[in-house]
Image (cartoon, rainbow, N blue to C red; front, side, top):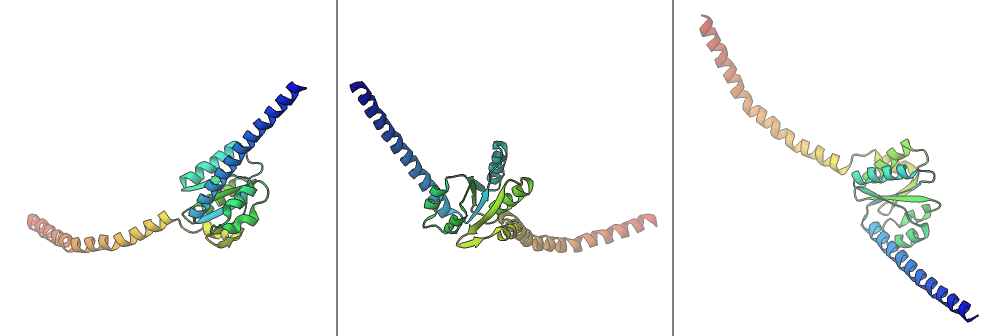
Length: 192
């Protein structure tokens, strides 16, 4: 009986250590998620049940290329991490097997999520949050249709550069016309 009791006590001590490690891991996970939620400008929530590992890897890669990220977490831990953040409104969407896509660019995560949902019917967008504004599925689609920050920057640079290009063309035009007139007179002189 003494040996059985000692092994039982050792087992309880090992369980306590495992629980302490598990609690620490959960706490760290909540802190990391909280930091992500504090720094993000948009968060999209979707169900991913039925997706293969390869499809999830593809989603992660597409999000990363767009400057966004994907997090899969226990809903209970994610709800705790949402407390005190601007995107706390997504807490009500966290039911079932959910994935959270976040990005600093307000268009990146929605755009990739919508495109991925079109190609994968098992990826179902539930809604999201942009700052304190709650987004339903239609709002996420509308947000995804907007140009990204990089596209907008490119358009602005194009608008700034266009007048300079036209100005250069106009300043070179009189010289080009003069050169053509001189060339025409020279050609006439040679012909005569």
